[in-house]
Length: 322
Image (cartoon, rainbow, N blue to C red; front, side, top):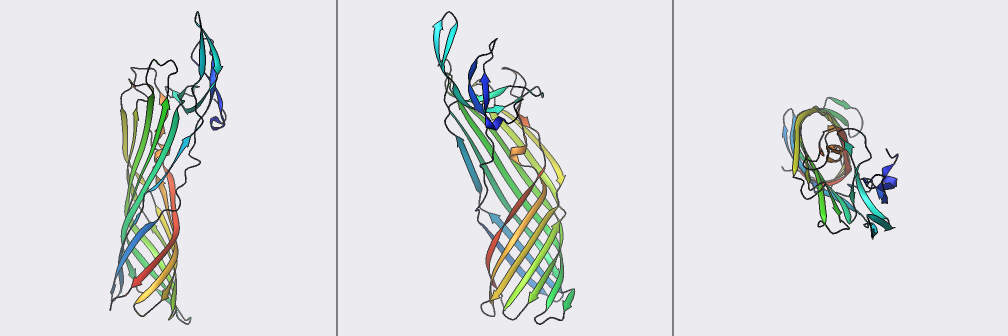
């Protein structure tokens, strides 16, 4: 019910009438960035009398980023006796906003000693392609070749988002509480590919353009786990969903190969990989509460689909065996 909870809002207790206890913000993932991730790709090719067969495998190092919310403090109160409490200084909280039984509400889960979110992403894959002999060859010095290609691809995308918030009861009645929300996903994509390889060939260099499309099925698993979400008495709650998406994958490669010797070529290029439908951990958490203990927390998995884009520069060395 707050227009932009990430900008801050007042927090009240559950008394009647309610008392102001401080201000809170709901953290966002805006500061998370998955950049500057390195990877390795190996390709082996076998020429035939009617084309070539290529197999390659790639793996990215784990991309990871995190942030912490600072400046959190508990409220400070003075007990005047007779049931009267004087608020000396308001608290500063991070908050998880919640639905109540699936309905929009003003309920929040508060953290006054710390909040941290960590995002991790792992991507790897492999494919086998057959590249036919040139379909069209133009009469340009050096030659321009257009070669059809088809094959089969596999991609694995595994990701995790962990949120950890700490709350201190200023009365000292209960110990410091650490609440955890962990969301993880695993996307297994596989299917046939079709594309075209366009190359301008010269004695000293080759310029290439390689668009490709994979009609992939995505067999995914999405899981959400909470621990001590509202109190130390809350059980660990694990919910999971498994299903299949139709997830076409588009790829674009551009490259330049420079001949060093007759059998060694140096290459530089740009690659863009676009996955149209994938489930990701930050989209899958259903932030809901079904009431106080002993009712289990209602923060569960609710999968959604979104896209993923991976792009970057490639540097390589090609060795041609006699």
